[in-house]
Length: 140
Ligand code: HEC
Image 1 (cartoon, rainbow, N blue to C red):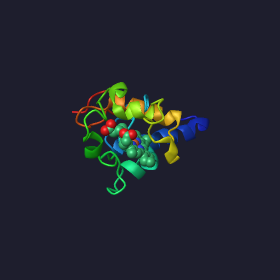
Image 2 (spheres, rainbow, N blue to C red; image 1 turned 135 degrees about the vertical axis):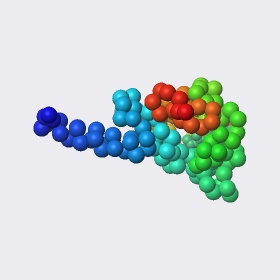
Image 3 (cartoon, helix red, strand yellow; image 1 turned 90 degrees about the horizontal axis):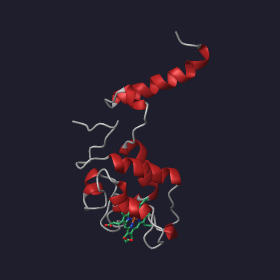
């Protein structure tokens, strides 16, 4: 039995549940919302990093691209799987030194505190082969 006033909530959960099942994830993963690269991180890097680290090889800086999984993992130390604090990516987006900070302040791009937190969670949960943990357990 579903209470009337919780019907919308129920619908939202069902819809979310369906979308999770589409990607083969259990509905229980909803409890502690997992960070998914494509859903949570890609839109941020697409907005704020791709102009210099994206698909356009003429504009690409530091031979670093974030639009492909290979690109993300191509330079050792940029992402240290499972450890945001050791990942140069995280060090650069939290740098106090303006010459180190990414995106460069003079580019006009900036990350919000919430976006930085998403990066932290995601980096802390990704594993060495770029298979990202969805709900606290390593994927087979
Ligand atoms: C306006 C251009 C521009 C934008 C936008 C930009 N970067 Fe960069 N990035 C650079 C340049 C230029 C370098 C190389 C010089 C340096 O290391 O500071 C660089 C270097 C880096 C490095 C160091 C790579 C290494 O090998 O250590 C990381 C990590 C990085 N960027 C991450 C990011 C992230 C994450 C974003 C988006 C949140 C971003 N950048 C947005 C221009 C940009």
